[in-house]
Length: 218
Image (tube, rainbow, N blue to C red):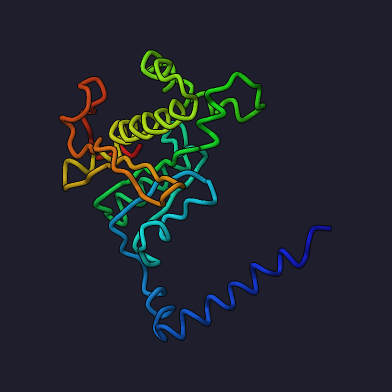
């Protein structure tokens, strides 16, 4: 049996949170039931220390969130693609933010040669980023600084991966949609904009630009 006291603490905390919200705004939950109209899709790391709403000081309903280990955007990840499709096609978000964080365990693990079992398949995607920028990375002698730079490069590659999807490219045919790359720092709580925004098809290499038909869905 697990620690029931620890488990119950979450349920008790939920009750306290609900009371506090109602005290501050009696219509808080009534407003939530009316639906969501977020302007932002957040693709972040699963790390428990990087909650999107908290670190951006936003309210419930303002950010649509997807999280996975090391904030990856993979063309084979049906979960990610489903979230992306819903956010872009149904919610009509105006911005997609890929937010990594310095000291990311997934990135650090990918820099090593240890066998992590099934996780190897996921980390390989980060290793591909490392291989692409190997000269730049290995010129950085300090391992922490090197891992921090890989965190940044990984985010920038995921921004490009989003632009390569037909979900995003279909949206660009109809309206404005911007993709941003950010990194969060535990040392000061500040988000750094990597200034790698992509907001049109011309920002992408020609080989990745699709001639789209009306029935394209992936």
